[in-house]
Length: 249
Image (cartoon, rainbow, N blue to C red; front, side, top):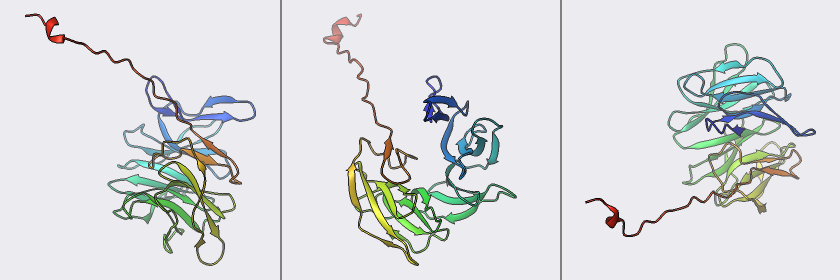
């Protein structure tokens, strides 16, 4: 996403990596774009009707299509292999839903609790889902079975957010709240098995636990892309001494 200097909102732009050419996909404010499994489309949230509704559009052309609208704000999280969409809403605590993108398009509740939660990510084999929750009193990363959200286990230690899977599903990355990148080994088998988290490196990020994505991991987990923060612009401060003398009597 790229900020519009006039409106302050974010638009979706496509960067062609071989050529470095940027092209704008949406001419209006959008949030949380998610690729389709075949990388030909994007689904995203936009407030064109007042609330954040879900839209989709082909990359390189085509008309924008309204996918789902309701009275609540909604954020796309992941386009699954079966064509359904994982999304979350915000009517008090965030809840997770699954939406078929064909047919009746009626959302199914996956996880509805009074505890704040965010950033669900389904594993490549779609057996597990990682997400962050505040049920312990701070943000921690959990893994649960998908789509039932059973067999749940906390996998972070000392705070964590923004989980992302390696392509083979055998490793889960997440950000520690202090900015360190960590990973958890996830073993295959009939039940969930994980190792203790390990520190990979210190990131340049000022972590925002509620951000949609402050980093991207390569599919093999060997490279990471960060939105590196820039220094804040210092504004001059004017100090007026003996200001009372300048007041007209």
